[in-house]
Image (cartoon, rainbow, N blue to C red):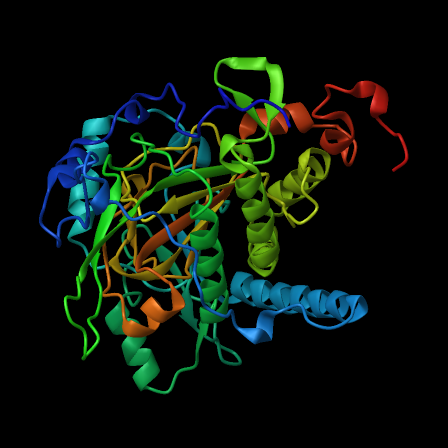
Length: 451
């Protein structure tokens, strides 16, 4: 297995607004007020306080198990992809369009960190948008796609269009509730509850066997999340106050070492740190294959050019057959609070979503004046290296008795599917299975050898 001792982090960047946590994030990490932030520092020298991430004990929804013969599994996958493609096409044809008077190129220009923070603070108190939308630049090019809830268009009904100034009109939770009360049919373009349940269990299981790292440029410095467990009616000496480690697991099949691109691509250490971690990663890939297929269809319908590019480079750079792609990397933000940033090392649009039991966690994009409700299961696909973004603080729900029985802990598990820009440059033009056949180009003499 290639060495990973100095593999780069997604947080590496020279951009001025990525070099340190924001003042607002620092204040949150020091706060002990649950409504302000639910992740707090605890005494690391007192090991009795520290509970490692536990693997779930629940049984996943049977409807999504790949039971039966190999042929029936293949037929099921084919049918699932067809359904996802139809759903994605209906989103593209019916979701609201919101156009901004700025080009994608203009968004790439550096902006004052102080101004961005002021804009973030203003958005925190604003009521969020909850409905699906395609946000475009002034030339009509998609820059952000939000897959959430929306009313189904009836025959002869035209899709709605908005400007930057009118983007909140008729798009809040109250507006959606009124539509539901009027009998309007509502559809969810994101991940349904079964997919969320599977992803939460799979991500928690993986984080129980791999090491969670800090990423202070994107998240607060707290190392543990505090939450409360529901007490059984007959419990004696029951401790309701619990805590769980939080942090980030970077899962990348091939990326560059920091400031050492000449050494080629490496598998990230979160995957290869131990045999158990590697086995856990493969199990996670298999369990989340349906989610990957869903994300793939969403990317394809809004950003088809990048989907084709990612697919080609993924086929060259992937070394794990259980990964459906098309993204070569994923980050699991496990119960950690967010901080404003850009992901300058990401190439093209990235996909992000959250799952779990929590309140809060809205998504804000200060340059565009966007605040999204970003409920569990909602998906955002956007140019993460270009558009400044931040997930607002969340508060974990109470861990119910059923969750305790299932071994599921509350809180927010965020995930980002991305393709490192440096990896794309290396993989461009490479043949399918290049990384697997040549150890990322280190064993060129094995290229093309029959297996």
